[in-house]
Image 1: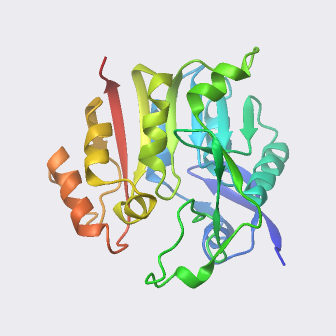
Image 2: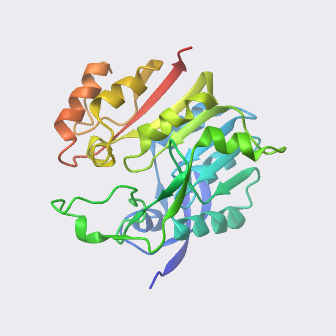
Length: 271
């Protein structure tokens, strides 16, 4: 019912062996043998020796494995709530023999509770914690998991974790969680320092369905002094300066219809 395939792939110049779902989206990209990503390129330029990295929405491990190869002295903490993706994540860590990568089968959020996860049967990188609206064209692809998954608050989680492998602050954070992104970012703020770098997916379509309003985006983004854009939404050639007004205008434009997403970079957390 869930066939898997092992593929050799060069990810932004880094050779990896990936065990993945045999589907037309993520699996199709990996089977092409060579994948390039602006997000990974950016992360490879900002990661430093000894960095502590938080990967929220780790999926099957592409980001974590890539960064572990680029900077073996970094410590990477991966959170992936889907049981199948989580299993593949751990298998891929073993296949590629990367050190200092820790995995947790939890969703991240602002509180500790059980949540329902909705699995996309076609795109295993598109599982969501918000129910698909019946008016959405892709609604038939989704099925709820038979059991709920555990959500944890990242600050509370690492405070309780203790031991040699815990983290009180992160230098680099990547968040890609199909709509829960800004809620997770807000929950992670106590774990950031003034020089932390955050890369977060910005998809108004998914944010709206997850209950994140435009005002929430403005409030959370406003905690940072620097905002950049890696992948402009709708018009990849856009060269307008990145401003809060531009980001909020795209929320109005794209929250009711999926056009694509942006990847935003936040730096310089305000005191």
